[in-house]
Amino acid sequence: MNDLSGELLSNIKRGLLDGNPLIVYDFDGREEEADMVFYAGAVSWESINLLRKDAGGLICYVYTNMKLLVFNHLPTQNH
Image 1 (cartoon, rainbow, N blue to C red):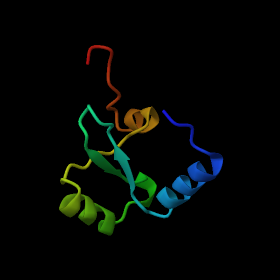
Image 2: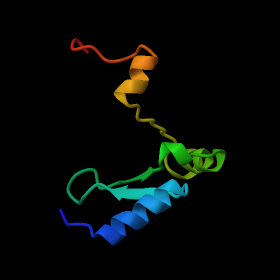
Image 3: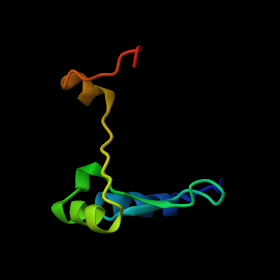
Image 4: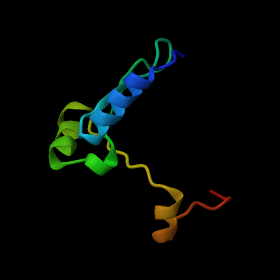
């Protein structure tokens, strides 16, 4: 894996916070596909529309353990 410069990471973070997608490519020899990722705090109806129309339509949302606790859906050790 290549090291990312601080400037590049800063630009990526700024883009995500501004609502821009990040395209993540799964390396050659594995799935060899790209995923479109948005920062959830900057998602809009336009980004959802883009995901549905142009990115395969599968939409996932990542929760923190705190949010899962609030909604009483924290996974147990049995799951």
